[in-house]
Length: 130
Image (cartoon, rainbow, N blue to C red; front, top):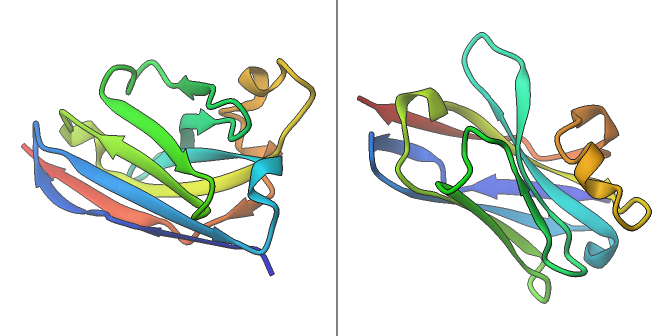
């Protein structure tokens, strides 16, 4: 059974940092990219970042570029989202999800399209106070 379990959310002041973790099990970690998605209150879910576990290639939404960093520990089947310089608009639920790696070079085109993702975690709440 595929499982993704996020942790690390919480309440932080603007300008602060959090590190989210995503523990994966039940699938071959190297065959799937890990995406992180953000759903702000009352808004649709949107892609934040994505990482290819085979070569470490990363993709970021413009809104988080230079502030957020995604990484993997392939041996432990863990994915991370380091969030720095947090802003009130970063508030919401953060989800990790997996997508089967597409043909080489194609991941960037689907990284932020949630309908391509197969499995999702339950989400972790991040609240940034101003």
